Length: 291
Length: 220
Image (cartoon, rainbow over all chains, first blue to last red; front, side, top):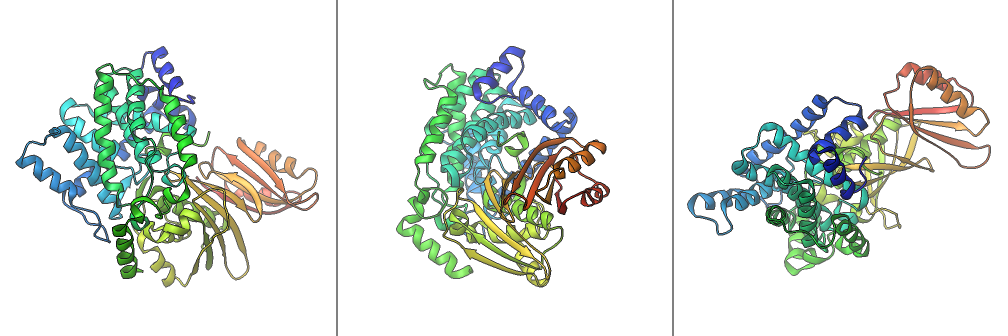
């Protein structure tokens, strides 16, 4: 069993297989399941992700009305204009936000690694798909590669906003997506680790400060940030750019930063954006109304 | 390691909005129901830190109750769980508790019916994964990822051996086991995580073993 990113990359290099393959083999061993069983379980998750994106593009709205509809706005914009940051990137942003809009509306999603950060992995997958034309198997492998890196973070640091701030959630999710994009685009296992490190480095210190304690503001738009950073870091890694601080040390830094974060900035809805005049007003309005 | 499966990371499939505060809460509720052995008639639920501050916005309240009703994380009836509990005359009370706890997402559930009750503490550690850290005053560490049996017994020599002998005879492998007691010679708790679900016939056999007080199980 791999304990950190260095071991994961080493195993993949030594056996000359993809990161996703290492994750699949480990899962088969730990759960005593066949390759087909593990595959089909992951395919079910993929189907949930596809359905969530599909639902979001029909337009959804949360109970509070704080979020919903932005995924559609971006798709319309892409039809009418040429986005400055490119179609692929804005498509990822739209689908990442869409997934989180469905989540905020209490729809069905697949946590990757959490619900609040569930947009980054599928959002990038369904956008990159249009350019790389992967097989169904490669799409499922994308999720295993994301999962392999998420597994490392979860066991060496944290993946919940209450424990480590948003860096632990959207930071991890965006970084996981970067690693998976690299593999799908034909990069090496080491390049996956570099992409992961570069995304997470740019997310360090990000606090979890949800307005009114809801997984809406700023969570939905942070998934836009996480997914776009994922694509940029993947491109950097594929270009040969490396992280001066190794992947596992970045994860360690994330852990220590999270430990230093006060509880007001760890999903209590007390600090940061939640504690702005508008944030407080929204809270009053929502809970004055519905509770 | 805290996480051992890729599906802890890519998954669970769930009703939004929060994996720790909704899906995790539902799993804590479900574990409590399993340990109690049936649907409770009443529940007093203490919430701490992040759970206490944000439970209304995250649906932690309906998710915990959904779990008590036996719902999985992706059950679409989840957000109606409070209404359903009311219709079933289950008396549910939430208490925002300011006591210090080790984990920010902590809930203490006291649930019961007219004759019995149990008290347990669950923490939601992220991505929908939970641990039960206390049961009826005993400290433990139960993930709910594997099937498990929990055995209250008297702290006497031979109690553990009589249980493991029965499991061995039935070819049940023990993955993890811990034993905890309140004081020498008093009540003790054995927590045994196993690889496969334990049949009721084996539970019956265990119940009749020496020094055993009560048995409950968690189906993974």
